[in-house]
Image (tube, rainbow, N blue to C red; front, side):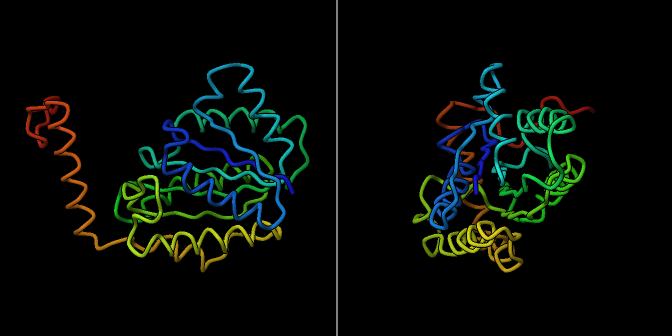
Length: 222
């Protein structure tokens, strides 16, 4: 089996999307899957890079979209790539292949905030004649800072979910419901996540010498 991990974050290889996607790739390789990566924001800037991604898309048995939630949806370059892939598939590809899976995370405390984006991806798979293998969604994505070991419990729940997902996808199956539930489980108490998030914003304000109070809305009407 050939798999393609498409990383949709503009941060590339220092992003939470890369962190999750590359760990899933390790699990797929452990089960005999050949894995390649596509860094969407970078590759889509040139015609050569775009053609490369589309060729990888067409030659894969499994495509995994790893991305952060942007305004209830996908990052714009990833949306554009899917539009190009759908147009191309309408002319050349057999239905049902490749299969599409999603790993999405958001900065909100709740994983269900990703539901609309997952619905968009599922609808894309159906309209493009691809198989739908399911999605992993997690909240509190702001906690992912380069190392699972920094998370409560060493990130065990995330690693377990990704491991179960890799095994199922490598067998040609869908993402298990058990993995979805574990992946969506809060990483810490909601109040603690909000507290540390607000503290992070204030530290960034101080670092960038932003003197305006964080609650100001200078462009609000009225």
